[in-house]
Length: 181
Image (tube, rainbow, N blue to C red; front, side, top):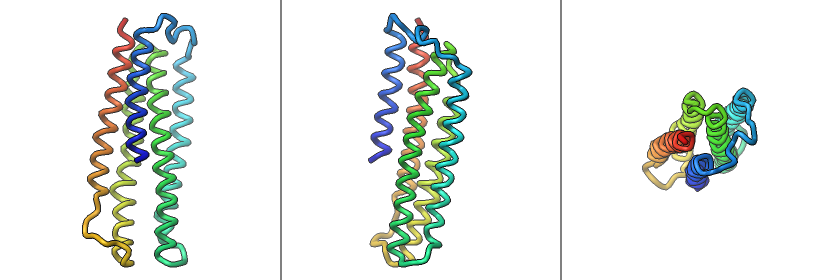
C-alpha cells in the first residue's frame, strides 16, 4: 500500500514540476538554485539513504538468528522490513525531487541522476521483493507459519521495477517538457 501511494506521489511530482516550470512566469531562476549544491545534497542524501537501507536489510535477515520463538522472529523481521520499505519509498521521492530540481537548475536533463535514482530504488526493491521476501517465505514454511503454497513477492517485485522505471522516465520527460520554452 505504501509503495502504491509513493508511485502516485512521484507521478504527481513529475506532473507538477514540469507544468509549473513550463507555465510559470517566475520560474526557477528567481530561486537561483546552484546545480553543484543540489548535486551535493543529492549525493549526501543518497549515501545516507543507501546506508540506512543496507542496515535495515541486514537487520531484517539478522532477525532470524535472534533467540526466541518463530513468531517473535517473524515480527522482528516484519518490523525491520517495514522500516526498509518506508525509508526506500521516502528516499525515492526525495531523489526524484532533487533530480528534477537539478535538471531544472542546470537547464538540461541530468540523466545520471535519473538513472542513479532508478538504480538505487531498483536495487533495494530487488533485495526486498526477491531476497528478503523469499527468505521470509521459506522461514514461515519451515516453522509451519504459512498456510499457502506460493508467494506473490516476486510478482510484486517485477511490478515495482516496471512502475518505478516508468515513473523515473515520466519525471525526466515532464522535466524535459518543462524546459522547452
